[in-house]
Image 1 (cartoon, helix red, strand yellow):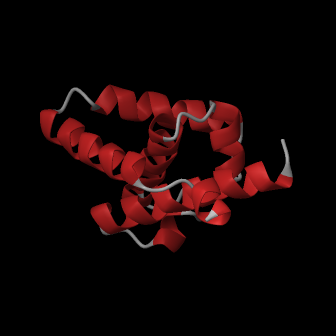
Image 2 (image 1 turned 180 degrees about the horizontal axis):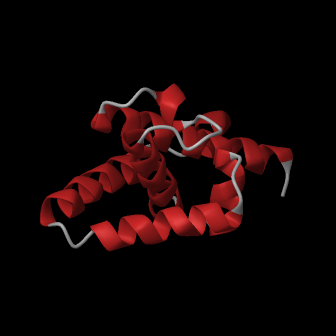
Length: 113
């Protein structure tokens, strides 16, 4: 993977992280902290990882790398969020956030402009 691709992946992860921080009312620094932190920050981190993986169609390995985590951590986060999607309200919220992220221009298109 090239440096440019890594930067684009990190930009996507940051977009998801900032979007989730806003939507969940959790400071981005708490979500991006190297430790688990409080439960609401851990949930927000799991959502950001999940949305990066799903909305941007990135592999778990690339998603994990963009967040500075292991692949197993990204897989765990995605499984935790999938399990919570049975809740209709939570599911609708994730659908809205995913649609928002999918509508965002890609980092590559902005660089090429």
